[in-house]
Image (cartoon, rainbow, N blue to C red):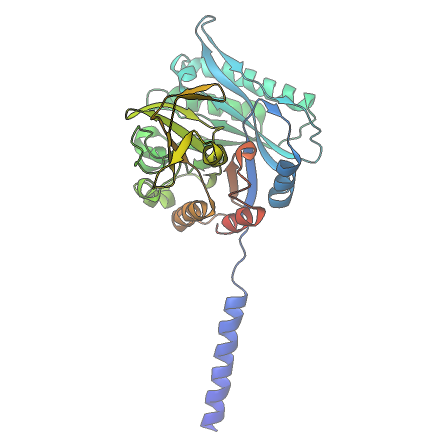
Length: 345
């Protein structure tokens, strides 16, 4: 009898174990993409990627807010022009704001600025047939500008009556008592551009590297806002001359560097040296110049996702936003890669 009881108990425990494994909670994260160019016109590959991995969820930069020195006022700049129908898209307007805009805006003037921005967003949304429920503000504010910026956010929320989200940098997560926490419904953690840009060809990848991120990620679970996260899917090349960083080029990638006979690829695989002086897409390249390629392949993107998800506070329907749609290198990242990375949250 005892043996029968033990066998039955073992069977129940085994069934519970397998049920627990089989019923592991499925990720509820939602995928989306940024689009940052001034003209919205997607090619077939971009449309397919957006549809198949993000159900057409797009964070669209509407315009920038900049300080105009001649007019002595904050004005909209680089407004997006939409060149395709958007009835099947789910759009969140994004406004990029330079910190200098708030260096010249007193807290008491933020109310009027917020009203103008809210009205302009609505005007553009009507023009392009966009229905939206939330707005995202992207500003790398400082201690000196936080009062004006936060006043603007409060006023914008009042006027727009939309859900409001603000981008958050890693240093703002780590030092909230100094930088403040924006008065918004949700934050968007920008999990990239965390390393130093330098003329050292052996420096870590400045778009993402785990060592730099590790200095900040432990603070993620203690932040005072629920956080979505933005991950990088772009690349750039750093032109280095005699140990000095000359320029950054977002349009020069591995395919161009690999096939150009004017370059030789060095042993580390990400640095190319010019064999002679020549012009590359209108850019003067001097004999001996180095081009350091920094990109995001599946392995590095998975590493970033694993590192961030380990510390982020659990959140239902967290948005995983990839920056940005027009710069996704489909030779490095496939649809399945994006789906699997998002599922880690």
